[in-house]
Length: 538
Image (cartoon, rainbow, N blue to C red; front, side):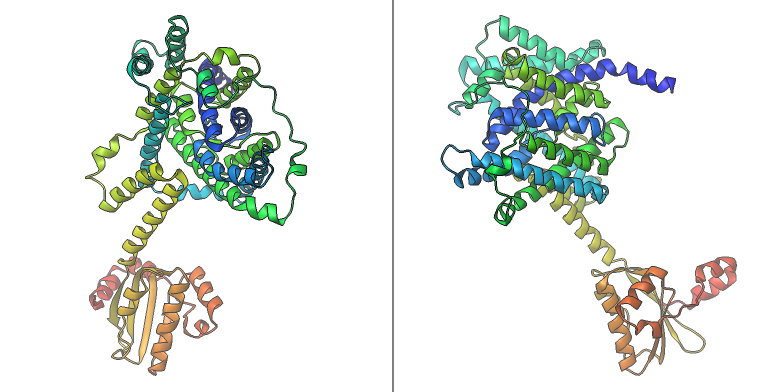
């Protein structure tokens, strides 16, 4: 116990410093995503504070950072715009529809955790995970490029303004790269931000800052009060079937994207820290956080992969780092908005570029010629889809592709060994899984017309896996019986027998119940094994 407390105490400094770094990086990201969704910057900042704090305290993955994200903001654009069109000009009804949708999104996520759906993240294959990481790195990189544009006009920086921006970005990256080689006791990201901010403020450089970014984007600044309970929410938005039919598709999509992004981030942080998080607990925490956020005027959120990586790489390991980041963000809003608005955007862009370099799985280039071609295709496809569409579509498509490849390969594994017993009974020993993909090959193994009067089908090394397999066995039995031949099924496992009996009582007539596993007796009697093997015909 004492050792546990000492280890925790040792990391307090790292957690606090990494929390400060994350809080600084939080601000422009949350503001940018609020602009994407078409809402006030404070709506994004409140989401970052509330979702970040609640998931840090109650989530299933210490060290993971949550808040407003671009993947969710993109879906919210249509929701807010359509909602605004349903109200009077200037009423901003879309904002209230957003809050109600976020509440429903949270309910769906809580239910996913209660029913333990988080475990399905384990079904994501490694090529999909690697493709997701590479695609994510590219997306983070591309998301930073718009920082090199004038937020008001949309024009790209040029001339002295561009060179100043590039120089400060390079300085930030240089500090983050070389400082750990000198000492590991200082948080390189925070030091880089402080140094570049000092140069920007006292060097009178004409560069974009957090404040100019917000004002040029149409916001009034960072300054605000505490999140306020939206007491008039359900007077603005009626709770009826029409409202539900409008918001439910959005809530379902947002819940799915949020959970996939959060659980994928959880897996990634697990790998980096060599620890294990609780996926179902994270689902409930994310859902609860979004429920609260919707009632208090936030745009909802999920795990922020970029900020989570900043936190881990800055030494954050416990819940304290996320708590510090969230509370400090609120402090910025309440008391230090003027100071934070002076931080050059270049410093934060440099930090994110270093995150990109650290996130991208460079080893994927080395293994492309060492893994199956199908895995290469999945890896590249997931990376591309993450960039072109979004994380949820990419991961779902990657899992489907991997599942189809697995099904195809498994379908080729089915085979039947034949032998004839002394009494003339022909035995088909089935090896390999029997499912929808392998039934064609399974059917081709039998010669109903030329087989003898008595047939045994031995499932000693096979399983009847699905409805297609049940139908295939049922039809095969009927073909033999229609030909006037007697057929028996043996060595079916208990669960396979229950599947067959449930589908048709006919199987009770053809399944042999009291048969020992022959592998046990063959192992006991090697001579019997050699004799039996000699009888097989492939």
